[in-house]
Amino acid sequence: MGRRGRLVVKIAVWAVGLAPLAALGWWIVRDDLGANPISLITNHLGDWTFRLLLASLAMTPLRIVFGWGWPALLRRLLGLFAFAYAALHFSVWILLDHFFNWGQMAEDIIKRPYITVGMLALLTLVPLAATSTTGMIKRLGARRWTRLHRLVYLTGVLAALHFLWLAKVGRTDQYVYVAVLAVLLGVRVVNWARRFARRPEKIPHPRPATPP
Amino acid sequence: MLSRRAERFKTSEITDETLYWSRREFIVGGGALVLSASAIADAAPSAPAGAPLKASHNDTFSAKEAPTKFESATTYNNFYEFGVNKDDPAREAHRLKARPWTIKVDGFVQKPKTYDVDELIKLFPLEERVYALRCVEAWSMIIPWIGFPLNALLKQVEPTSQAKFVEFTTLLDPAQFPGQRPGFFGGGLDWPYVEGLRLDEALHPLTLLTVGMYGQVLPNQNGAPIRVVVPWKYGFKSAKSIVRIRLVGEQPKTAWEKAASQEYGFYSNVNPNVSHPRWSQASERRIGEFRRRPTQMFNGYADQVASLYAGMDLKKYY
Image (cartoon, each protein chain N blue to C red):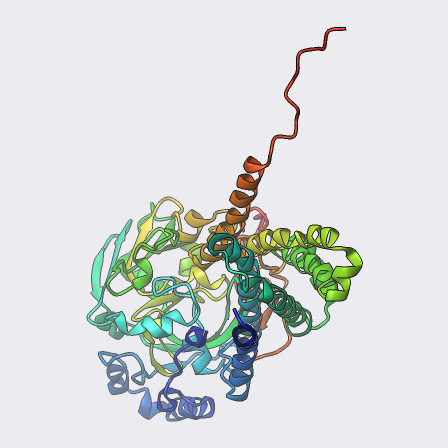
């Protein structure tokens, strides 16, 4: 892919990342947030956090399966958008939903497992966002940086639990997200397993003891 | 993304709150004239949902708060027969044929009978009652319902001494209720929707068999043509689009208990001290308000209903 192509996909990612916020702005301007605006905003931001997180997790599998190079260029941007939406989702919970009622929030975090894991998912994203710059990659060294950023798999699992546990009986869209996550992580597992299988044997073959 | 929003009502379809109240004043103020026998006959809503429905306002049983916006009460609904999202009922409501409609009242009664809903409405004087509605999901509304006490109907069919509970069954018809069709991932409730009350709860004067709201025939998404409203319990206890009321000897197995008994008990009285695994019940958001407000015991109806549960451990019987 040439420079132009890369520019086009980056612009596309920015558009996708900003569109949900634009939609929210549009609904606010039109006073069209429905009967329960706080719930609508929270769910909208939560849905897009998970979608963008899945999108960032999809880049490596695209390379593995199709051999494309360009998805890797979008991974950081998608990941940072996911973090931004997670932070907004969380802020709405503090600001609009509970309005700084710390006691109530603490009770929710402790007593409601879906909130506990949601909070943990956000926390796992913080070090990843903080070390997302090229400078930080250099400072940490590619190996350590890569190892640290595997934390995002845990983020995905925690986000899935968050959604599974908050969804009421009868709702099914959470299973779509979980299925996509399973495929994206599954591709990596298969890839590791194959690489491991192809790895040259390191253990030396036992040799007959040399006679004295 | 944009499709998740509820289809908006046409402005012409919305009863403006002030207009609604002025109309109510007209109904009440018109007194003698409006509430004459002919007016009561007019009340029979053979007309579709949304047609005006006259009723005398029952002040004793009414909350003194301003009702929730009509648009909110008709576009933000939990009615799983139409779908699990809040905007599904308003969007799918047109599929339900609310007339003609019959409702069978049987079980442990002397005089079992199948009523046509319009015939039933003519049997009892309609009352308007402004009730608080508290959803188990920690939001609430104030709704001016129109109906008559369930006990009036139950007295007509004469429950026998074996009757201990009342079981309500909602219409089962996947053609009219898309939410009853089997989904790709399965899930959903065990249809038809079944709810129940203890006989003394069903006979309580607050328990309202409901055929209208906001001065109109009940909209489909709110449980047309006939539903029950039990204001001191979480909203899901108030069965909608009822086709059968059966008096039984055993505690009915309700749809939500079958789906998740650890989350939804048979009693499901509004109780700020017993939290649901996913929602604290200590506070609620009144639709239309910004800040949460504390939830009241029995949804504010403790004075009238607390005696029904004297001596019961409400943490055990949640």
